Image 1: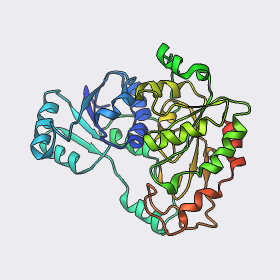
Image 2 (image 1 turned 180 degrees about the horizontal axis):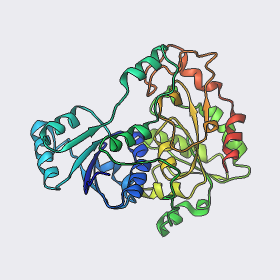
Image 3 (image 1 turned 30 degrees about the vertical axis):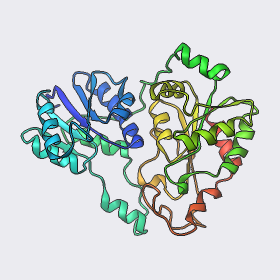
Length: 338
């Protein structure tokens, strides 16, 4: 076992990828409780790391303080003052490569992003599942000579909701189902007409909270929730930390292949995920979930799935692939996880 006392973790974006790192860091802290962690990330992602033992967040500000090469030099000076023993780079992008050069003399382990395997999966020359992203993050620590097993974890805690949160939720603080119906691309979003059929069935027996962000999504979710007595939209009503607290009290989250599913998984929820032009084979399924929780588009009708890793690129017509997932199957999967 290496005698490391202080490690810098780097993951700068995006929300889902940052959330995937959280259970890995919890597992690392449980296996190596003597090691201090400093996590370099952007301000908007800092709340995700709030409960990790012996961890502090170092904020990266690439718009002002740490902008450009000179800004990265300033950041490297800040990092050196922390007396870290090693860097675990979970991102491996141009900025972190520059930091590696500026931090010469400090051991630097970087994630293998498996670009060739991803390319083979997309072009159809391979159908082999890629290593889960959580394991790729864990490998960064292992390459530093540290032990880490992503066995089932016991850090999940339902947060006590603040009075202001309870007041806003009104009678929905005991909701057990969360639904996040949107994703970054339409090719990964379940049609609202089909989602309404899911909600109509589930809300007969359960209270449901809707999650989403941005003005357009908030308006759509508010309109959707207004149709039902047992459905409440959280969009635009809470801070990010309050939203995380609310999610921690649910039992199951229904989401697309999006950050909401990863945030729910990091909080220990059962997560049912709907997949359109992307696929769990790429290694981005939510952490610690049953395979049956991944509901897939019909690859007999859409054989080129996955068309891309993140869903941005797809052949004409493939944006309709997610429609092949039937609402009855979604309802059953959610109920099976309650």
